[in-house]
Length: 339
Image (tube, rainbow, N blue to C red; front, side, top):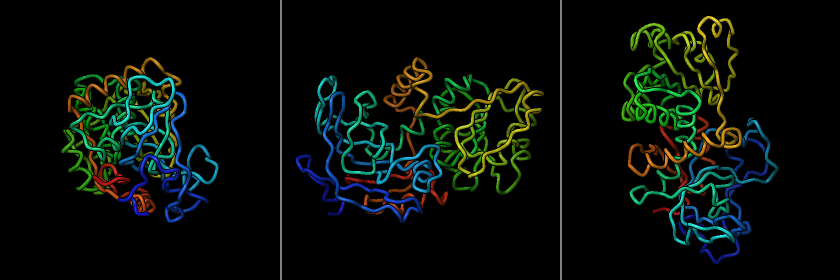
């Protein structure tokens, strides 16, 4: 059954893209599986769109921080329409437009805790809604609660052409920072410029540090957001002001850097990490505040996720390969129910 003929809510089965063995994206296959139901405290959502994030590619290769038993459905971010409301759930009705973070989103239906759901503004389409929460929530936590960026400070975003990087550029600008976007191609830098970047640095054309010198001068960075890792991390650290805040968000380069601690000592820099899945557990008050503020900004149209490419559900493997190959500009989205 092609995705354009998705199973109706009354069907006992559904289509799901699943991985049965570790390997490359071509190991993903489309299976017919039992449709879940909304349990107590849950919503069953008919998925219209699901976004691909870089950790999804790591999971199918067995390179993610945690392991998932086989077979499993990748994906952690989606948007759609409420199809069932579980016992004890209030504030939601069948037909509501919703986005949320939950495992197994590359499927026609997903059941997830209602507490994880966010109402989608009527002005936002499902593809954009699906592309918003993982990256923008991660970026907002990093900027607002971890780095505590202040208006007028200078923030450097590495990997600024990807989904997380663009979200960080956009939200740092919303928070009043001067934003330096560093990325690996003119196309990605153009996307960063469209999201509010004040300065652009192509770290494949030139080394990062000379590019930063030309953009803002030597040692002028207050905050670094780094989802890339590798050699760029140390270069960025060397260009920070005394007392700056460096936030590590991941290692898309595949290389976990080893930072010389003498730089941390001499510069008085704070290095902190953020993992969005566990942040609510460790910082519940900050997490709740950030989610509320981000929801208000979203409803007010202060930011918009950039959807750079879309694939149907039966081409999930291609979508994952596209992201794994670092070809994506912005977010890549799987359209489970086109339109």
